[in-house]
Length: 192
View 1: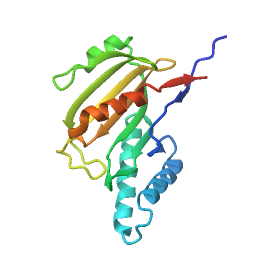
View 2: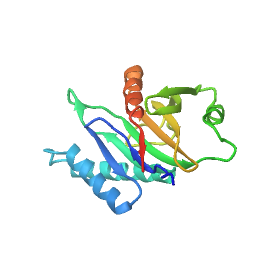
View 3: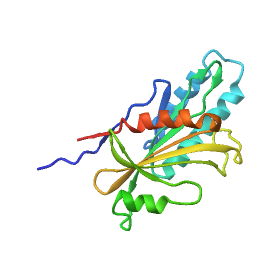
View 4: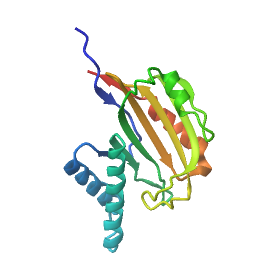
């Protein structure tokens, strides 16, 4: 009997904080930990602390509503400046009309981004990169501000798609971020 792999392995940078999305109590503890880490040594900002926690919790719940199972956020500043990056990991049902990655790529094609089938060490996937506005405020980012969005879509286990959705408001360094995001996507592994 063949065992279907269901356990996802993924390597992210050390300074990215994991927010498990499947259990609200666990999510709340993870958000509290992320905020505590981000505001370490800053005791005179209780309102900002609360607002940050609520914004992060709202964003995580939004990701969960879209099929997200995990969310990662970058917490470490570089030269004192926070580097805004996030990753949402989603496991979605494979639509019956999209039986292959080629069909998924055709379905994702639009005027803003041309998806490409790419071969990574972790397997074949559809890569889609674009710069767009979010349309909604996320984690304090102006909804009209342009952000870099990079998605990697893999065939998942048992009729699912694995979607890695990276985003960052740092459009000026899009090429460098795209390299980092691909390095993370390249670590995808499934085990039983």
